[in-house]
Image (cartoon, rainbow, N blue to C red; front, side, top):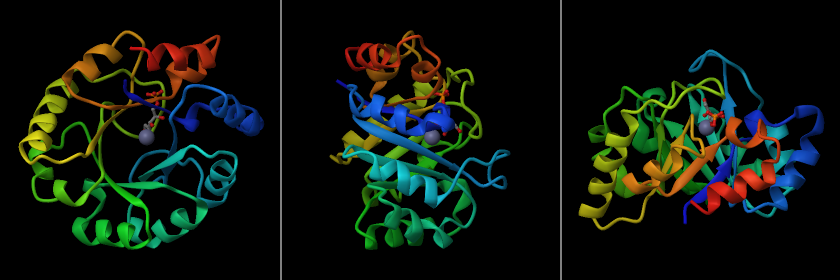
Length: 215
Ligand code: DX5
Ligand code: ZN
């Protein structure tokens, strides 16, 4: 069974406590927390203060996805806010290895995200240092976009890279995950599904999470 990580980006921010409670009482495994800076991506979400409130609302694993430039200036704040994992974008990090070392030195898990155009092979020399790869299956910046089908091939390539090296790195798929495409994503080798719109725009988010979990 895959790890289900609903994205709070699609939550109702006027009722954030209610939505966090809903996730706490659901089969969701992780909270996926999307941070956007208006520079790396063309949108701005929220920062460490709201992240801290979200993390304090739950005992579940808090997975923080930094879609920001110069993440080294902020990872400490997000670790203090309660992140269990911090993911940075390969495209935003000139010294990615140093960024990963910094995250791990703060006692949290480290992830690397790659955009749809970035080849899986670019992870070859960092994969053994990290806990998670986030394959973006949409262009980052907004919830509710359509899954890019090419991602399925990238999942298979990444699964092979991880298995060939006998590593236990999570493969997380972020963007456009639906009840319809989740099975093919898992079948290709992913083990973490992020879902924003699919969960929060559904009539019954708790049931939708359970349906994703049972795939
Ligand atoms: C996109 C974010 C995603 C997003 C997923 O930039 O990283 O986590 O919230 O939303 P859906 O599932 O609606 O595509
Ligand atoms: Zn995300």
